[in-house]
Length: 293
Ligand SMILES: [Zn+2]
Image (cartoon, rainbow, N blue to C red; front, top):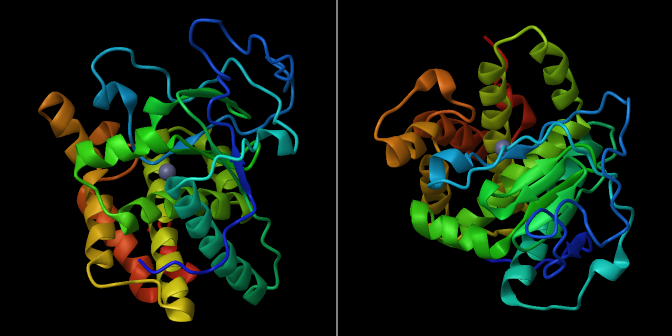
């Protein structure tokens, strides 16, 4: 990948601040975190993950990927969270996020709308999000309540190694997928899905949400490449490979030796590849209607 655009200013570096579960209990110490603070308001209490179900990936120690009981107030703008750590991983993420900002700003503006940039929180091990406590093992995720993407860089690197989804563009696809959820949030898709979810068949809907985020990641790559030539030979293959690596069938086969399509939440490898490719080839939001039919 060729990334020479400006870095995003929306990175919150909270690595090293242990703000989650673990020894000390929930939200201990900080004082800033209000447990159960989002009372009464019907907020979306789902977090959207790249596709790594911890119970599938890990042996034991699984955690509930969608914390429902506990909520934390969305941390307000937190400049003190920036610890000044500068490293290649952070820079890379900031550049990819910056690229997504440019693309989605332009796409939204073409629709006569304004794109509100998401924040991206770097954390280590565990974190309090606006959707509750989260652990790195859940994989990168997006929380609609606080409009933030949460990533543990160490875990992401480990995950990519384990799943054989390596390469810089594979990592960029992961970030772009989470940004895709933010785009869905901005467009009201998540809210509509949340309303439909009450009617049941929640997994099937969830799969459509996830495949759309894959497609939006493809749209981003296409548009960024059109404007600034970010793609180098091999990048598209890396992205497609990463999309396949996080397919539910492949993850399930890895973990339990068999596949249960009815429990899919993100889609099969083939579906994820198909939708990522569709976004990549068309480069338009219209190509990403995973809810049709
Ligand atoms: Zn997702």
